[in-house]
Length: 603
Image 1 (cartoon, rainbow, N blue to C red):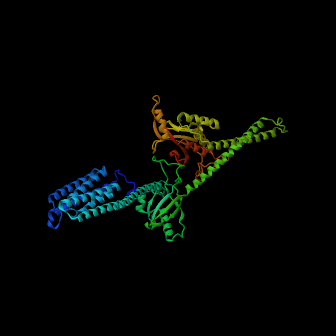
Image 2 (spheres, rainbow, N blue to C red):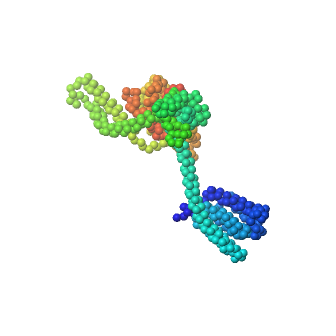
Image 3 (spheres, helix red, strand yellow):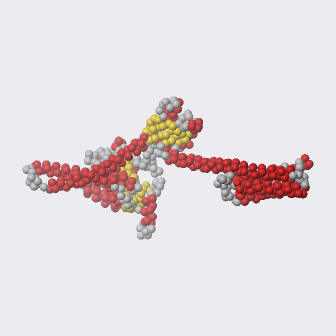
């Protein structure tokens, strides 16, 4: 097994280059000290005494090469092991010459050979480290043998050289093993640092995007941080201002802080959660007109700017995190919880009612058919001894059966239509001729005067909507308006507005506009954000309690209503990337009405 696991000869990381530069600085210091000792040490220091000229030239050359290698390690960080090998070879040759000029192994300069041995053991794989240990030992041994042959050195010098060789191999292996551990720990620490930074970023994104609010409080209840959901729930604008100013002038925040301090001081004997009413401001478009309630907006803000109910829950950190003095507070919008439960209940009920509707469809058709046949027969034909008066009563009963069978069939069709979600084919519709034709057809079908419904539009726009879906939605809305209107001229109005102050462009509108732009025979169109259709009447309006359940399925205030009309209309709008809401200030007219907003182009 190699002494440093998983290490090859590829260029290592930045820490290795830093260590290599430190070794270059060490060489430069050693060369300067030796050169100064030989020049100014005199006879007291026995360095360079045997050959001062060779010692001085070698020390200067060694210092210059050390500076050059340091420059290359700092500016040319390529081919790490090639640079390391060149430096180690220069170390062996230079230190051997300095040792030889100072009297050989007995001068004590052989200890300087530990520098290349340590460098190779720390910065290179085990094979390269052992190779340079052998090279150093061989250089000292050759120099010692040469001195023994030329200067008749005692045999003990050879023993010292051998012991130094053994020590070189031992030091190389031990330091290589220790370096292996340090390198592994460094890699683990670096990887854990990367993982920690990635986890912190992931946690930040999760906390910022989560629907529940999160507050960080100090031990005295002072806010330290808050995610965007918590700011929205508490009606605040800026987390930085919250940290700097605290709960100044905020009743909800003060209540949270007071309850938190009581919970903390009671050591958990007081409940760690409570309900809170938090105020929030009404939302507005960039253009300044007030929006109706948006089903996709889970803020739960009422039209009158009233607050929302929050569930506040305190959580104390565990372990070492407790010493930080920071506590986590979770804010949960109870309206969101109720809506989620309501959606699950409606989904289950929808599946059940669709199954029931499918089962009663055939018996209902048989009842309607039998009623139609019975309506055509006379009393004598069906064998009843009725007079004309009795026959008129029977005909009235048959009419009741037929009308209620038609009503039940309409309910069944609407329920089954909710369960079918066919792909939507969005198409451009020129509202100017299309809307007039729809209103004319509606008035003929419903038996109301054409003057009852007024259509107004400043610019004849083109809306991107499925034609049959838009027909169903508008027929439903106009039916409700005609039912509650006074019946006077223009008692029901359909206004078409162009909204040009939107924040984002609709992808469907962009695609359709691009298709039309390729046709040279069609006039150019200007893409805008939304087309707004407002349906209003001069009736008494819708009270606040009814508005809260307006688009829920099976909710109706009419004795003949199914409670599915508005729910189905909103679902059709959502399928066409449009919205359907009720606003108490629809179209800026200070009157209540239904508002459809969809993508379109201005003609």
